[in-house]
Image (cartoon, rainbow, N blue to C red; front, side, top):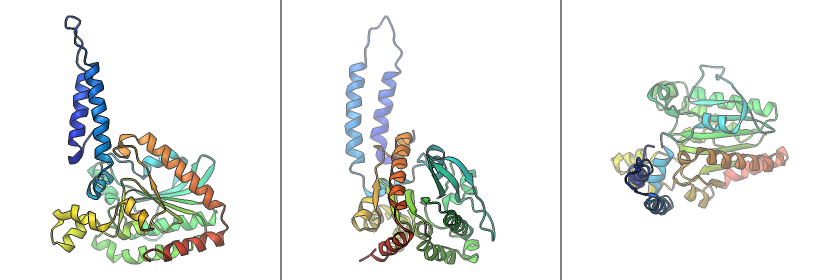
Length: 315
């Protein structure tokens, strides 16, 4: 498993343990490594706890970007059934950076929407590295309005560095598409749950982030700008991204403290990629619990609470 720079002591210890476990047994030489393996495994657990319970904001950003982290389609396949993907914005094109459609979460029918990144260069180019174009935001809004028509709750997975920054996207009204979503989502009369599963960058994330419940995974981030972008603006030096991550207050813990999000979703020790099954079970319980709470509200109560929630941010 690929490790990050700060994980090198952990990956080296894991490699050493694996080497001892796979050491060929020779009947002529009676060598038993079980005691040493046990000692190293205990040391490894302690090292993991010390490392992952004391992560800096920049280290959390690195985990949020881990190439083996679960993406929207992974969660849909693991959590849901009967997924029917819907395409296009009925105006320009089908943006592959945002996917969505009808699905079932056990007995609940829902509309699921989310940013989708690629696993390799070819797929990342196809999906614009998870950076949506205007047609992606228009598609997302179309799906939310369809959900409202059929009285289906909406579950949104956010995972983007930001909206696509190209000239074509600007020419087709990127800012207007995001602004329209902000305005319209506040009045969508069905429950909306937004979950930041990796990167929550700028207007690209906010364009599908107006929700009744906003949850952020423990090692994900949600920010007005990427740490590199912030460093380039403040210090004219993108290498100071770690300093920018500190001042941006972009971690789930900071966001909860400031009242911007509603809940932190715990991750397996070391990140989602270390135990995808456990993470999917945690997320399923969270979605189910919040849907049960929100579907009990009358439409008027739901919209009033959503409006009040966003009006109070920043006070």
